Image (spheres, rainbow, N blue to C red):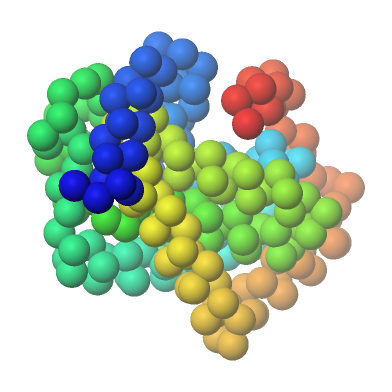
Length: 208
């Protein structure tokens, strides 16, 4: 086994102790599916509530990015066909067995790719929040390690896929149109943006 593989296994077992902790609860929250849930996960880092009710154009942009980056991930998964950690290693997992069967291959992490691509996209909309957004993007991917459904190297690979995807999208007219619409929307309705849940943000900041 390579050194990276040894580190992956070590981190899998080391992170089983998080079960029942605030970090475990955040990982469960991050595991929720859908573009709305993904958008909401970045509300604290963005400084306002991201949802279809108040920032529909931003959610539409995130939806586009999420599905776009996952296409590249799908190809890579079938190329490498890497088993999930829990297949051969015992320990508490944050997802029920019925959901685990639907996850497919492990490398790279589609969850991490979608989360980090979202972070990079929001950072271009909100450059003043870039550091917080990128930290949240990494934390989002890291949640999959905490959950026990991904290796750490899956997360790092997912982030690399996200960087390459966002770089490629800079020349895509549709992406640029969605980005522009979101920028205009935020500038126009800046005073109407809803603050995120303060208690939730305090808990998230402590974990970060």
